[in-house]
Image (tube, rainbow, N blue to C red; front, side, top):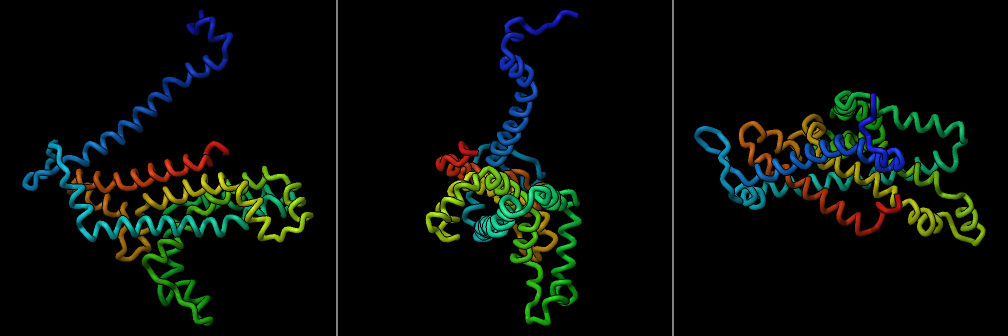
Length: 286
């Protein structure tokens, strides 16, 4: 059977690869951008209060209600605060863990440690969250059972529980990029810093941190965006506390345009976040 690929493509493998990837890439772009476009357009529609049908009439009532209602403003600020807190906690735990894996552990142990970091990702999302619900149960949970003799009690269900649960869920997504960045960091730079009399903290602040900053940014894109759009964790261990995802879930079946309006908030926040990250030049250094 005669090949349908032009002769010039055989001579230029890059063009051949681009041609083969054009169809699936175009489909993904159309599907993704099409869904976002539909979401944005629907956010400007309204709903018939009598029939419950969507009315395709352009208006800004949904955005006005969202930004003028204190309850929705609090949900937006709370969600951003939780996402930032989760990202900060993941950074604090991930840096020492990744540094030990990349620079202190023996080469044979590094593979085992990487596998151990990946192991929680194989477990079901719901299983892990319900496990945290059991551990954080006030009075009867594992946290109270272990720490109550020390005068420390479980935070119960609410904001702290959500932050703990999400930090546990997304920590591997922060460890792995930082580990990859530290693995590329030459040991000679650390030795040179020590030979010149720099203390450990100074070496970390002036040598290590600037070089792994792109890895921190990459990890934060996962932890921040995943926390921003999560709603199951808040539903299971958040008590009466709500995040943006919960509001979208509750309004989806009764007021689709308003649910789409709420859903545009995390999309807009991530767009601004990515724009700020791009201005730092961190993505170009990955």
